[in-house]
Length: 236
Image (tube, rainbow, N blue to C red; front, side, top):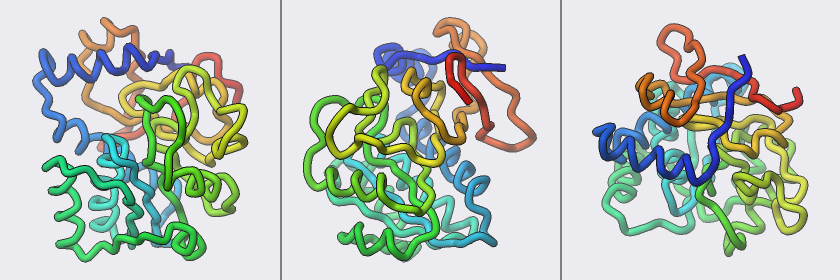
């Protein structure tokens, strides 16, 4: 079954509705998203293929998803390292960092050195709400993601891509095509341009909410919080 996409505007409205009439807290949604990301990493990068996971986190919710994923990955037996150069003072993000510090998960300021000694990278810099110019220090980071031969999993959107317009025609993200993408809750229109493995995470939508936003809910297997999918209009 090919899945339909949801625009950035509708995705933002859906998030707000989940946190109002849906009765979810932002903590819950971030925990579910990060858990999904960690399971996608587990499918893409088995422990036997290398345990070192570098997670690049941005200052917003996408970065928070990456922090949650790191905690789960640690407990699976991986060795995550966090690149988190712009850390908000929001209490939620501070708590997520503290949880990782208590596990002695290392944080690095040197992304370019860290990417040379890792087995897999999670791009959790910018999500579906990104627009405008890529600001420092992220241009060089996105260029490194584009150039590396290490597999990259992008969270909800390859960083610097337009959610409705796809890959940029210029700038640090030009030519950036990660090996895998995990769409959270529902695929965004950018997946039409994506050519790697594509996962969906977000096994919590009610049938009523899915129907209201015109979303397809695929069959998840067993305990899995992710499922590999194709998308309507996507060329595989």
